[in-house]
Length: 265
Image (tube, rainbow, N blue to C red; front, side, top):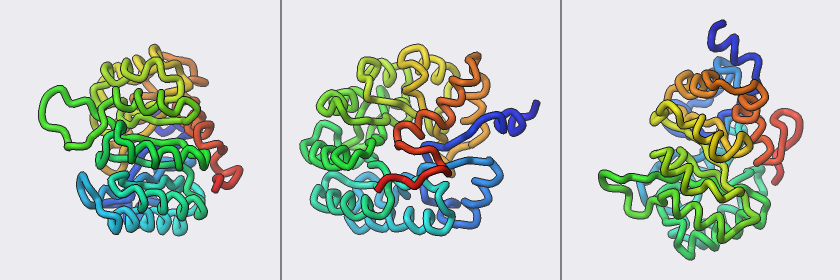
């Protein structure tokens, strides 16, 4: 059985993608959704502005996400991108895009998860019922961006807001460290988006966290879709577990069934 033939047995949502590079082209994005037969794709940000994007760059990223959603349709699941270093602007973005069908918050590397400004922005998102996705990398070697949040900070944030729902992106990069950092935080799910994709990451996630806390994502367009989805298909687990990872968990976290109901405002 070929990969796409096997995939057709499942409903698939990519829970981690970006509105930059090739995906800035609505026709190309639509073609990818059709070719991969995706039921939905989370659109996070365009990463313009490097490690400390300005309010204008943040606003443009969210406007680009809205443009793609409006052009391509309901399969685009828009997350609101913010920089907590500018808390007033971040709060205004949440208020504005919350009224435009955006459904979650995205932090990248512009502010630590232990910063009080991050807490204020997180609180505003959670008050809307939004989950919070946080880019997180553990870098034992080499220089990290100055405000990048390692996995232990995500655990601390989740404990500060125990009723909120969080997604730690990339499993913290070094997946064993990342998974163990948030293992005892039941309100933190993980994705393993990106080109990191080492053997054993998804299985360890299932073993430590359980199937309800592991979410499929790719980091498209900067990563290979087939490699990422193949890591799920190759797992020696029941199909219902794969289905939870490939779509069910992100649907539950976002409070929707893609294609059957509008996103909450």
